[in-house]
Length: 131
Image (tube, rainbow, N blue to C red):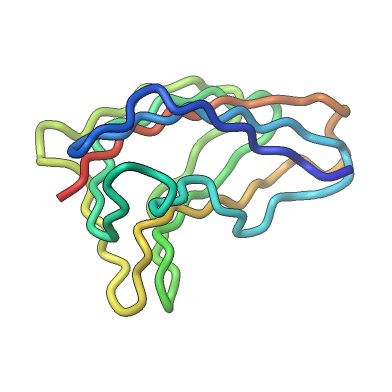
């Protein structure tokens, strides 16, 4: 068994996509550069996305998000045991600045799932705007 990332699409429109992810640990290891948001799976499969808002609660582990490109670009760190709802509307969103080879995808790496109790979970909700 491996760590799982289950997704639930809440909105999938031509301009906006909102997806809720539930990460569940099997207790054996980390998720290393797994795909969290797969841009090609939605109505508007563009590589030019903006992160407008992110809500998350990670129980007992943390994570780092990256824009997918030829050279991965760190997007943000998500703290463990510290729920947060971060909004980027005020500055127009965080732009996918992945550069060459950008796919529009968001990747995830976890820290702290090694040795975590089986069934440890976390939730992430991404609010994406397509440009």
